[in-house]
Image (cartoon, rainbow over all chains, first blue to last red; front, top):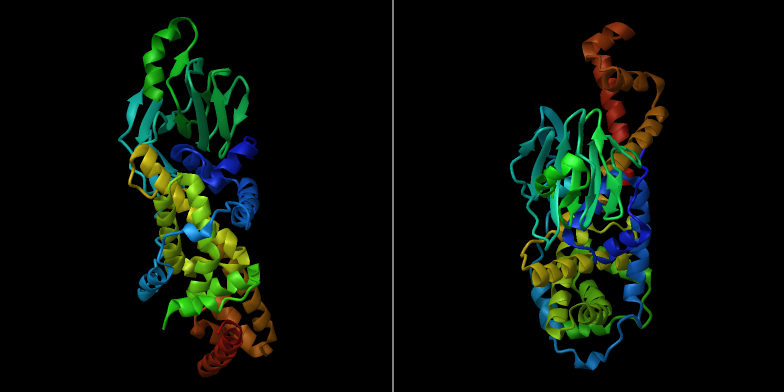
Length: 220
Length: 198
């Protein structure tokens, strides 16, 4: 069962279209798996839409609009064809010999080929979004990421499988937001596929694993 | 026909029901007057939103044009059972605004909003399943109303997947009778369904 959800403020910003693209993609992927948040989004959208179209919401002097309404209406309605809906094809990826079905929101986004490092594999999602980078991260069974913290923030959506860290156990659909305040050592028994967005590299904290800080960049 | 005239026919008091009915007329009848009415009601609101969003009247006009063009072209994706016309048109506008902002901020020409907020959610597989499920339930009701001997044949062929020959042996009736009972039953079912789905 999904225990970790995006905070309400995050859902509100998602509905208002105020989040960066990659964070919005993460939320959309979570919604595909979480009927509870999906329901909440439906309600929030009604609310935001009502506020937005309230007659005093963005009042201004309408007489200063410079726009030929009639010509535009004629232009648009002249073409009576419709935009057909294209259903995205479900996409499967195979990592470490395990097939996974990707969230639908990723279907039309390009992905780089997998880079491997021990039990970790990473494929970058090609979505230009400022400092934010989005990746699919696979940790093979019995694999872990050494104890680390985050220079910026890191969002993880568990697409499949499970993992655990000092704070608990996570399962499919969990949406986990971590930042510099959190230090953790994710470990997976059965293997897992995550979608991640981070704003900066990971920072390894302990002893010899500090030598791994280049890996932090690899994962980011 | 002048559209100015068309839009002037708009009633003074517009409520949600009216907005929805206009949107449905646009979808089902490609009704230009209904579109003009929607345009008249939404345009100052969309421009107001756009001016705040972009702080630029030219871009606010662009938002209006893109939004209303999409409303015209995608109206068939609106599902009145799923919510108000205002909610649906808001999502259309929000998506366009998102892509426009992304173009300014990251110089990206993509239309990622279509992925992030699948606009046709109302039509996605969950819904088909729901509709199919309802349809199944209704079919089962009609099936129950059939005379016993016809019901038997439909069950045999469609639920136990027996061949008509097997069924004729099992029920110990001639093959021709199986065929005619099946035909009668299907005709009746089609009438029922047609009556509700036409």
